[in-house]
Image (cartoon, rainbow over all chains, first blue to last red; front, side, top):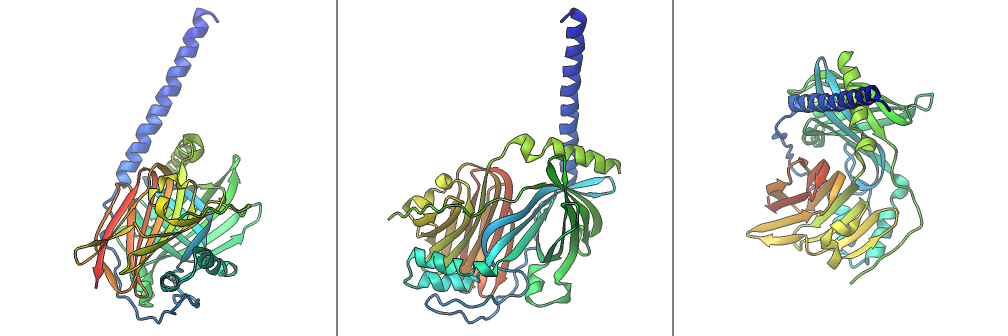
Length: 232
Length: 147
């Protein structure tokens, strides 16, 4: 390589470093714009009366709204941006499969004299009733997702729709328990999966309609051979 | 449109594939109010960072699914109880949900910076949903007492 060639190479390297630096600065700037204080408006609804079974007896879940249960598999997991005009807000989205179990059911299991294997088997017995649970983090606030609907959308794409829940109001069966909605299409793109769609927030300080762009990770987990480790 | 293109470029530049993957932790922790016994259920890539499991009865399957009964997570704290849930190591994704049954209310919640929390009450249980990304040694501490 001649002197001129080395010079061209150096210029090229400098350009690349400069580009990465500028992109980093832009990213930090965008993140800085959307940073917010943690959600102080924590929903501490009044506990409701419920009759829990004794001795580890299983019973159906009590809450038809936001499902409670044990996570078994992450179905959709994405991170990216919610875009509103010139603003970019960091957004995370996760939908997981859960085995529906109420905390009081687990309490019953803990209070029983069952072994850990028996407790596991009781939990696993609910696997046939798998349901979906999801959440979204916009900037630094967590929004639980309800009414999650996943459907095929052609061309190896998947449509995902859900409502944003206000947990406190949800337990009171209030009409305003739904804060907004999210809808997106997840499609293959450059060897990965990209989610594009729309986020509508109808209440609160972030109320607006955002465009979404998420990098979606492939599903995790899967049943393999089991290895059991017992101690004590 | 320009914002969308810029976001797309940043998305690809800072994707997990470009930055490298860390461990993932998705756990539910069920606490039986007064005795302080806890059932830990969920999925975690590597349990070596969960030191409290060393003295716990547990089942860990090679798909990452874990079931454990722990006595060491909850300690008596004045008129109530205090739960400490430390996780050593780097976590690309962290999502822990804590359920405390039996008519309690949160007194104080302290989490590692970068963890976002959402607390709620549900069917005689208090629930703390904690999520975070790209965290080293995340820890959750909270106290609760009879409401």
